[in-house]
Amino acid sequence: MTDCACGLPIAEPPAGTRHWHPDLDAEPRGVAVVVRFGEEAALRRAVGVDGGWAEHGYLVNYYADRTPPMQWREVGECWAGTRHPVVAAEAP
Image 1: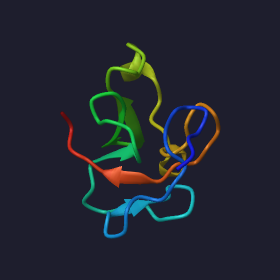
Image 2: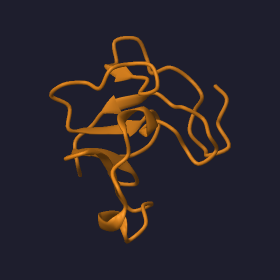
Image 3: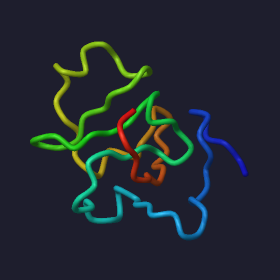
Image 4: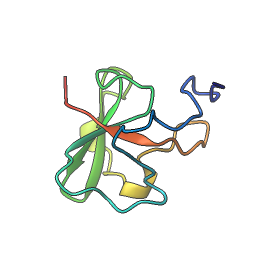
């Protein structure tokens, strides 16, 4: 498995793992929290909010409450520009 410049794997989640490609797949219904595959929810997670998705976690800036929500298609993209698949998670 190779890694992205951001440190996350460039791979598909294991077979049977419920996941989405936000740039390709429709926004999932009934899923409130997702994380990029290979990332811990405590570090960075996307939480569904009015108007889109907001990032929360230890690696997210302290002004996240002032940052406009992302659109679903942006959720999996890392700082290196790679579009990672996301998996459902729970907020820690």
